[in-house]
Image (cartoon, rainbow, N blue to C red; front, side):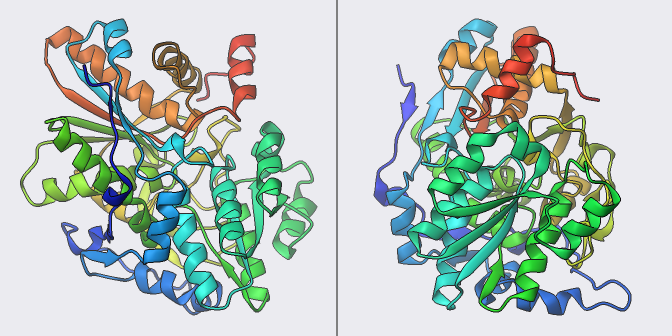
Length: 433
C-alpha cells in the first residue's frame, strides 16, 4: 500500500514554468499613479533579475545551477503523501493526496523563492535585502536564504503576528535576520502610521511600504517579497512540476486541486503546471483557492487597479483587491491577511479557471486538528484552509459516491503557531467574519 512518493535529488526541476506564456488573455501591465513614477522606482527597489523575470514571456526559464543545488541541500524534492487514515475517518471513496512543503528547514514553501531572490541579489553586488512578512514564514525563509548567500536581511513583520508568534522572531534572529514589528519607528511611513494610531495592529500593506522605503532610500539595499508578483509565482513552480511527476508515478489524474491563497505563492507554485493543461484544453481539473472569510479578496474584492502597498510606493496592479488601506481582522492565518491578490491568479479567477471559496477561522482550525489526528502533522493556520476545503470535497464524494482524486498543497507546518491552537481549545478564538 503506497503512502508516500519520494523523488531523488536529480528530479528537482531544471527550469521554472512561466504561466505568462499561456494565459488566456494578455496580463494587464502595471501603471503609475497620477504624477508619480512608481514603475521607475521598481528599478531602484528590485534586482535586475527580478524585474527581468517579472516581465518575461518565455514559457520556461532555466534555474541557475547554484540555486538548484541549494534547493537540493534544503530538502527538495518534497514528498507526496496519500492521506489514507483521513480517507478512512471521513468514510469517503475519494483519494486524498497532499504535497508536503512543510519538510523544508523553515517549515514552508517560501524557500523556493527566497533562495533565487537572494542568489540574484548576491550576483548583483547587493549587501542587504529588506522584506515584509505576515505570519513570519517568508521572513524566516529569506533570513535563511540570506545567511546561505552571505547577505544581511531586514524583516518588517506585521505587528499582530509579531505578538502572536514570538518564536518566529527568534528563528529569524537565529538565521541572522533583523526583525521589526510593523508599523515601526524605523521608517518615515511607520512613524506616520503610529502617529495617527499608536496601537495599530499592522497589515501586510504597511509592512511592504516600510520595507520598500528602506530599499528606495539606501544604496546596496534591495527589496524582496514572498508573494503576489510574477517572479515569485515563477520560482514556486518547482512544487507543481515535482507534483506532476509524483502523480504520474501514482498513476493518478487529479480531479480537484486545492491550495490556500493570500498573495498566491503556494497556490501558483503547486497548481500553475496543472492549470497549463487546462489552458491547453487537456484537463478538466477543478482548481480551488481558499481564503479566510476575514480577508475575502477573491470572493468579495473588486477586479481593478490598486497599489500593492499601503503608502503607494508600488505601481498600480490590476488585481482583485479589498483596497490598499484595508486592515484585516487579527485572525491567526497571518500569511493570508493581504488586501490584494497576485495579478496572474486574479486574471485566471476572473476568466473562470479558478474557483475561490472562503472559510471561517474556527472551522479551519477544526479541520487542521482533524487532519493532525489522522496524519500526525500539525498544519499552519494558512494550510488549514486548504485542508478544510479538501475535507469538504471528500465529504461531497461520500454523499455522491464519486471516486475523485483530491490533491492538497500542504504549504507549511504549524509548530510555531501553537498559540492559535491554544486559543481554539480555550474557546477564546472567534469564528472570524
